[in-house]
Amino acid sequence: MHWKHALISAILFFLGLTLQAQINLFLGGNLQGNYSWLRGEEASFQPGFGGGVSFIYWEYEYWFLKTGIDYMHKTSSVLQYPDDFDEPVTSPDDRVRITYIEQSVGIPLTLYFRPYESGANTLLITGSFSMMGVAHLRESTEEFGDLVLKGADIKSRIKTGIGVGVGFQRQLDRQTYLNLVPSFNIDIRSPQAFQSITLTAELIFGIY
Image 1: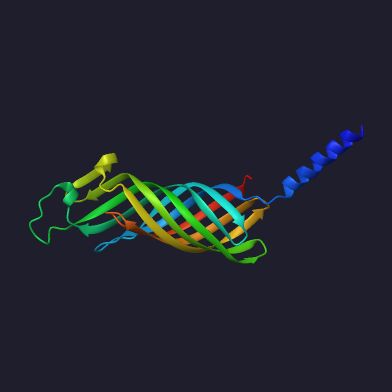
Image 2: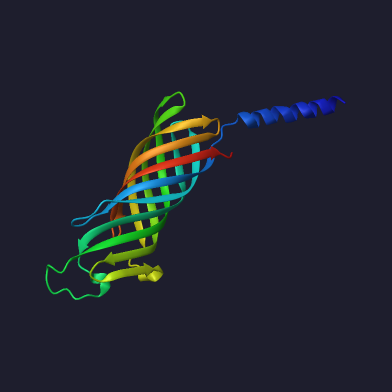
């Protein structure tokens, strides 16, 4: 009879340790709104959107690391030569306004710093590097119509980007957090090099 009490006490003891252990693996999801423009002449500023799933490793109090999969939809127009439309260029004035609508899937690697905490709110500073694959690209002009590129038709499908941001984190309960981070992001390797101001709303919850 005594061994049963001892076994139950041991189980309750280790269960209590488990419940009190720090959770350091988190899953979550994010929604993004972006305002993007291409690096080029007379580029337009246009809204876009995105979203994704997040996997977070959070071992230390003042920083954590995130990866995952993100989908991004960006749009901008720029004054360029219509090379992709196979149109002959005979004069420097043959440039036309081309609107690029790009859909991509990326794997981000983001480092979050938490330098200041007040109650349930914490300041966040982020730095990110991402590798993206362009899944769909549409080029549109008034003069030559639309050109839709997919798969191998897209030149240099793989692109990379970097970003920095400053936002805040709100602790909703012991295992759930809301991150709101405005950031500035640029493509550093891409034929259609976008720059974006992005607002990311991210909900994460501890799993272990």
